[in-house]
Structures are given as structure tokens and as C-alpha cells.
Length: 257
Image (cartoon, rainbow, N blue to C red; front, side, top):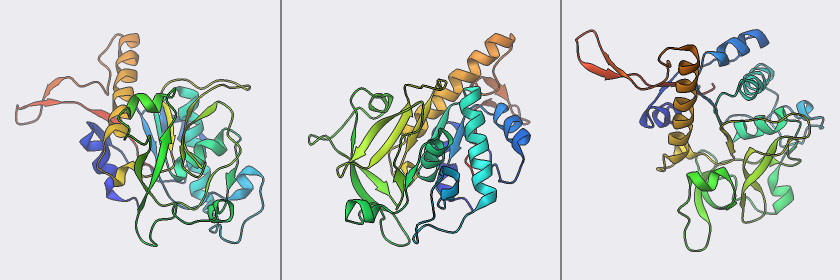
């Protein structure tokens, strides 16, 4: 089940949410992503460490093979097709593994505290510092005086070796990587809106990350429509519903189950 706050966050930002259940093959993943204007890869269970060449830590959850395969496939195709991507918590880890990166499997072993975890059945808060030369800083420019931003958190794993084509955009005050975005690549670059955050923006009151994603999705849809000589499917435009009332068409986004 997907927490409904993801759907609310997309809708409040002007998008239309479409759910993508896992289980399809690679061709289905490609065709599905090609039909979208933007993609949200959400939080969830731990990734099977075999996916990044590691042995399983005792605190790492049992593999969810079906979802791992689907999330990695849709993320890979979104990057290849230039579909705007917002990857949240597990989604950021999927993005990193998709680009050949690895994960710390249990952060308390590394940092000596548990403030990333939050309460057992909820979300805590911790501080992150945003890199001033990042795309993320342009989305979240208003930092408090001490330079840190409070974000909702609930995770025990994090990025270790950074994946190719990514750069760090934010850190927790203990040095844990808390955001990544498109960066330099040795194997083949990734372009467009690519952002991963280790925290849970859907659990907070700040809509700016979702608003930025929807804006990028609308821009891409507009460009695709212009190239094809037609109105873009995701571009807001005047229309009428069955009752004859004016309506606007909105971007399609897909939170992952």
C-alpha cells in the first residue's frame, strides 16, 4: 500500500497521480514511463543488497524482489528518456543503485546515533545542509540562519558510494548524504530534472519539491507537444468537462507502490 500523502502532494502541486503497481517486465516499464510526464519513486522497504554487490546486514529487511526489479527498471528508463524524476527515501537509494552506487545498510553502526530513524511508526525531524551550488538550493533557497533545514525523516540506510552521473546536493549534520541530483558522469550523462532526497517531503508542509517536479514535467510535456505539432498532454490548457464547465488539464505523475 502507498501512503495517500504522496497522492495529495502531487495533486496539491497541480499534477495528476497515476499508480504503478510493480511486477511488469522491462518492456512494460519502458512503455509505461514513456507515457508519463514525470515520475515519483517513493519510500519503502530496503533494497536487496545483492543488487549492489553486498552481503545482507542483520538489520536489513528481507528482499522484495518484485518491487526491486520494477523500481530499478522504471527509474532506469526515466533517466534514459529524460522523464523528470523525484526519488524519495528508498527511491533515492534506488536511483543511486541504478547508477552503480552502493548503500550503508544500517546507519547507527556508522554514525553512532538513531536520529535518522524517527519513531517506530512515524517520522522524526533532523537537520540537513543544502549545497549552495546545487539545483536543490534553487528549489529550497530559504534556509534558516544556521544554514540547516528541518526535514521529516524515517530511514536506517543511506548512500555510500555515489552512483555515476550523480552529485551530492545535501548532507545531514553528521555527514550522511541526504540529497543527490544529476552531476558529472564517466559512463554517460543524465539530463533534465533528476533529484533524490533521503527525507520525506510528502510528510511535511513544504510543497516546493513536488511543485518543482510538476513544473519540470509540464515543461517537458510542452516541449514534446511543440515538437509533435500538437498541445502537450501534460500542459495546462483550457477545456470543458461533460457539464460544460471550464477545466484545466494537469500533468500526469506516478507515485510507485
